[in-house]
Length: 169
Image (cartoon, rainbow, N blue to C red; front, side, top):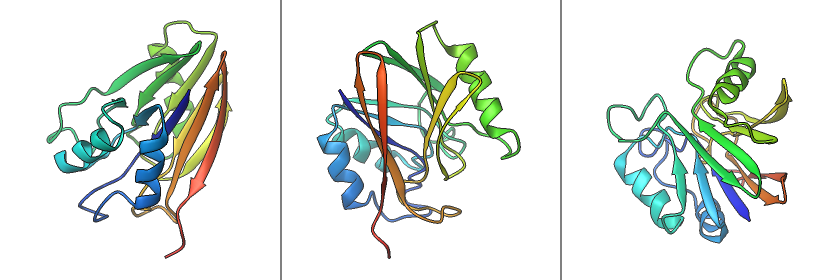
């Protein structure tokens, strides 16, 4: 199964729309994970439409007043448990704080992956046994230095993640 992993789209406050190169990957994936900060109902609806409704999404700190999304969501695929959360809070100790939150939510799967956002920075690292995937900002919304997203091929308890970078502007 192929997952598209995005976060921090911030449409319309920091970007006009979901970029075409991101939209193409959302359409091609079997399922999309969005770690919050859609920033509008229209952005959420666009991601839902591009994903053909195959979407697991959470609220970011910019979404709570506008969107009816959970703070944390769990998706299990091919024996891998994905815990999706935004990761709201200070940058200091971000990775440890998010890994702790993922562990507290997890149901005990052997392979555990935390999908997070908020920092607008691409991250793929393991912290205390939890693999953290932060796709950065799919639109390159400030303070991101570039637009990034991830795809993940999931098969038989393994995850192979690939970062995709947007075209230079």
